[in-house]
Image 1: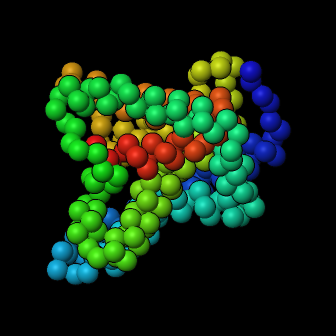
Image 2: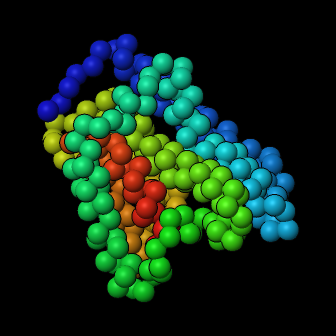
Length: 237
């Protein structure tokens, strides 16, 4: 059912979304344009110790692009992360239904032979080096990786979806503006726009995964399923 919000709240949401966009754009510009050569030269330099490289890539790279914007806005608005579904309400259904959204994509990847042995974050470029490192480096490296490529990447979609859907409410239960925008945003960011039939199918399945997990968040009131996907599925197979 569509909910109405007053003009003051609409203005707040507009400002929040614009702020997230601006912060992300500034971070992207700094990483890709201003300091791109230095950044890539350091994080991809395998002759340097892996832990500092993971820290820089996780904090100055991944978190800056997917996490810094929503964190800054939440701090400014004094909004707790629990407001966006990080609670125990309907926890098990949220986790199971979110994982179910991965099934079509998994079947497709399996059918085309694009599945390797499962390991969290194995597709993140520093993970293999972290796995080969000593125990303390392994623990810290995985913790940084899990926070940046796991928790914040998944939760970033949740906050953006919640704010977009509150700003542009829908009359229909399973049509959600915020979830759709986030799904499109995901395929654009990850370069999953399909042109060939196979690539187009892959794009649709990725959109279904992101859209589905966010609908689960909406229906259950719990966002942990979105985080779980990025902890155990995304970058893991």
